[in-house]
Image 1: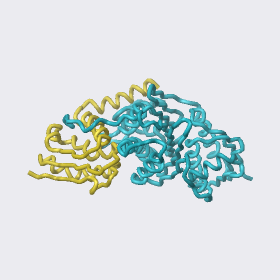
Image 2: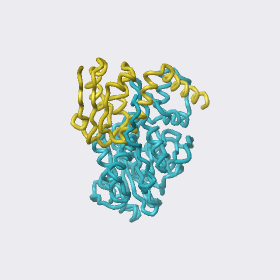
Image 3: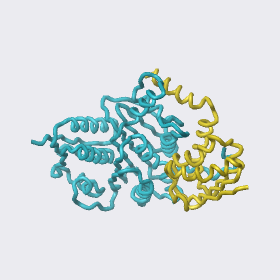
Length: 118
Length: 293
């Protein structure tokens, strides 16, 4: 079985901020994960994170890969508590976005509600 | 003959932002050349400095002549503007030096490494708050969302920043302004694309934009940045105010208010105040053992 190991600091640097950088990680691991191989993301030495990076790198994996498969096959190592805090928020939102068919409708409904209240 | 506009004293309450916006709207509608007079200005907070920098560049890019009557500046304001580098940016003289001022900064396009460096070394780790490297990373991780939001949603390539440390208040301030299209504009355009309602008031547009998971850009799950920032200032006893079009939001540890006022600015300005007391900060918990997904 394929194992893809990525040292994020080497590939991106010590700041993981942008969607563009997140896409680089996504492209490097998506094929492995969809074939139920293992991907290991090593965040050793990465200091600063932002939600767009995690949305692109990890959140969008949920588009076509089941959460159970990702729990089993995607390993995140040496991620600081700060990075973990941001990642958890991103995954929580991504699960709703990709896995709950009513979620996007609820976002639109909220906008409609605010529009009517205006 | 140049038209002269008087810059008033600018603090950082909603009425101060309103004065800034009214001044800006008068200036951009006036026939150049225009001169700014500071005789009646006793104080400029970082929001005003970032904003005046943006005003100067906006006029420059529209080929409209805007001058600063430096001779009318009160001495302490002049010292502050020289120290933070504003004078060297817009006036072309006096090199900045270190002090309680945090350098005035203009970003022409998103350079995230440069922004992180600025936040960590020029704004945060100057000795006025005893931050551990982990806390510095945590604060920077949250504040970098301001810039991502500004560049992504403003449709403007330039973002203007100024900060200040106030020893008596033990507070650290950061103001970030863009002169783009503003958050309510983006929400209204999104409503047109998705055929969601006829219109929305600006305060409700801001309320929606600050809710978790809301985004005007499709393609992937997004829309966490403003929510992350909001929660960060709430948890850590800071405050945040954001002004865009004729609305503003004020967030602190106890409340979250979305309001309108009788002035408008087409872009967005965000103003963050943090307490310089490291004991107030709550770091995320250690890596949890539960399932990630």
